[in-house]
Amino acid sequence: MTPEPPSSAERFQVDLRGVVEILSRHLYSSPRVFVRELIQNARDAIAARALHEGAGADGDPLGGRGIQIRVDGDDIVVSDDGLGLTGEEMRSLLATIGASSKREDLERVREDFLGRFGIGLLSCFLVADTIEVVSRSARTVDAPTMRWTGRSDGTYAISDSDEVLPAPGTRVRVRLRPEEVMWASPRRLTTLARDFARYLDVPVTVIDDSGAPVQISLRPAPEDLRPDEAAELCRTVFGFNPLSTLRLDIPMLGVRGLAYITPHRESTTGRAGDLVYSRGLLVAEDNTQLAPDWAYFARLILDAGSLPLTASRESFQETALTIEAAKQIGTMLRSHIVDLSRAHPDTFRRFVTAHSVGLRAMALDDPTMFRFVYDHVPFVTSRGERTLADLLDGTDSEPGTRVLHQSYTQRQFDALAPLANAQGVTVVDSSHVHEPQILQRLVEIRPEVRLETLSLSVLVAGADSPTDRELAQTVERAARMALPGQDIQVVDFGTEALVGLELPADDGWRPHSERNGGKASGWGAIFDEFSSTEEPRGPQLVLNVCSPLVRSLGEPLPAHVRTHVANTLRVLAVLHSGAPLLSHDHVILADSVAALVKTATETTGRGPR
Image (tube, rainbow, N blue to C red; front, side):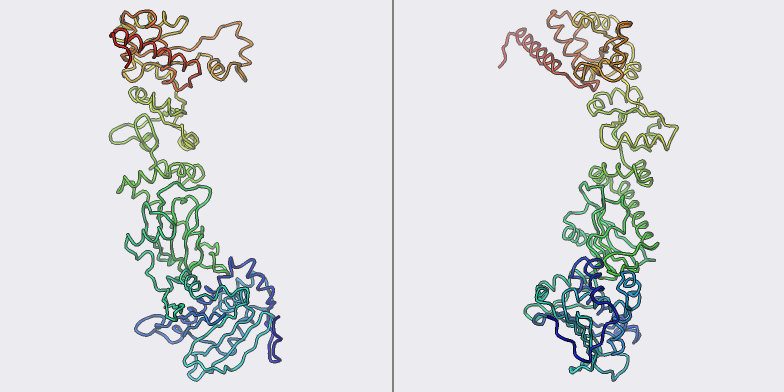
């Protein structure tokens, strides 16, 4: 039970239980913040003394003073040699909060020094029922040492201290509740204090298990580290080796730090959190306020300088300054990636390979990222890897175009890209996620650009007539004999890599319905009703006379060999056209290849080995 307050006890001018309820449920993310708040209070006191006394010793703006943290039994004790407090200031610590326990009141009062101190001290009631503050003010030479004892029952007492501090400063003793004594571990306390204050600008020491002081602050700022040290910090904090590192500096806001570019694909549904400090003290390990959402590929370690904090000091107020900081960091990140594309093309290619899907996804929602993708992210095209800017605006070595053809399957693109390039047709591989939508958005932004689905008939129309007409006629006759009823055309595609194409039926629905299991649906079913009046034309096999395999049909082959060659050509043409093979296509191809191998071995007089 909480002991009865002495008769001289005073009442807090605040609903303490209501305040602690706000602190534990709505303001702070964890009870461990009481350590940070005590360190912050001590640092503020040192800064206040430096301000009161003028320039610090030896040019140190904070006068060379420091903070000590130790475990004493089940108590945690934090001492500083800062400005100290008078009795009246002690009385004001909590009184300045007023009688309200509303969260907005806590946020407003924290703007002044005593208000900050008061709320910081209140955080200790998350783990303790009794807090003792012993302090001597530096405002007067003969200031007495005062004692303030606060209890969770809402009472406090102020008196002259039996113990006289030899110099100005403050000592806070937090008497932990029995269920909270796990915090009274020197090792745990050292780790916790180091996490909070490793970059703080005053010496902070923790007394370890052996009684020796361990300094946990004044570490070099991340932006001041050597490249190898910065990379090691990234591995330690975020668990990856950075693809690239960018130094961040916004002098007007005092924001400084590092941005690490991740080398692997990240989720674009939300940015992973950043490690953020404020004037050297940890704010959050998962903050997402200081970089744009599109910068999902970057993780930050930075000090937010003068950006205003919320009352919990675990995030930033959504002010114009915070928004401006995120905007400027976004600009620096974008410029850094652009610089990589120019100065470090290999690193940039790795970046695009890792983040191409995410960049394209963000481009659909963010005009700035769309422009970045347009200028810098290459697409796979029949001309090779080209950015949209290269395709439309041209380069020093090739003209731009206003007509783009899309291929929705990679198999079709791989087969037809060389032919399209030879004919001056620009094809974009749109088989990957987001690419069709990006190209459609491109047309919306650039209405002079025409976007078309790759048509096999366009490539056939661009083919040359065979120069050896006699050979072409012989090949055509042989193919018709081997594939009776098949519509066949022989052209010159100008490349040996392509045996031919199979153009779909001219009605546009019959091959689709036939290749999807038989019965037509949708428009196909409607057109079926009229099929008796005019028989649609079936698929057309277009053979490339440049191909050695196609030209072999012009040789005097046995009928069964000619049939197997023609069947093989037809199945290969289906594959080149990007259409799927049906089960009987696989059987025909396997039978024909086996028969051709058998014929070849019989002709040479050697059986298979």
